[in-house]
Image (tube, rainbow, N blue to C red):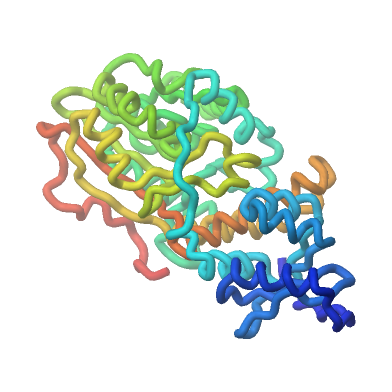
Length: 406
């Protein structure tokens, strides 16, 4: 949301406490191009360079809370309206991330519980908010994962369809192939694999809201005989399949369960011709998810490094890695589309769910976009196959149409 940078309060004389708080904030922020002030109070911090936005804090208590626990307290205070950003929210977050070095200074990972019950609870808190909420700002297929932009000016609908095709090409799908999908969202990929590529798909998901929606879509499109949506955990996948695919689920599995997922892939994948794809938010360095997002938005989430996904999941799956692609910039652009649509629907979100919820999700979407823009998060697609699987000799089959320019 764009507004003009606000004027500094007329209060020109700072108390000793304000000078002390300003000095502490300055040490925390380093070279961040952000002006920080108290609402109806003094300026606390002025950057050396021209600021991109002004952060207005509603009271000294907010300042103290930020000094004690900046990640969680900033998110909570912004959601509650006790912090305002006068200027561009995205630019402010990018400036903060760059100055604070989020790629280097993040917290160590704490072990997270991902039992069957915990996994269901975590999914319920994020994905079962209601289809009507996500329908306000997702594309028409309800795809809640990174899109693929073969052109910079592609619409979100075009880019999400291109992503579905990109995944299917990487799986080398042929009519009659059997596919198992772990974590299927609202069913867009499963339905596309059946409709456009002639595959038979069994898709697992622990979100009751999403499974009900996907089953209705399959019935409406006449694909119920080719796609089965199963309300169950990936650990209970049964049967043998030509291909395994997981888009946007590995972030929710948890490091302690990586080898379990790998053994599931090994168990369900055809021993001679099996191949598969993992699509997941990741990172270059081992670090915990942002504390506020972990606590308020995505409980139990952890973006793995490539090394963790390889040694933890794929080594246990007894497969060879064939291709790795990083779609970080595509996810930043996807989030820009989502954020624009969300802003268009912001007043409706606030009316239905309240101001705190609406502001929290505004911050979550903007913070996620900033994370991909500054490379603190990555988006990996990893293609793998059995050693004996017949796969194309070159990568030509993976190249989509388009000018290749972003």
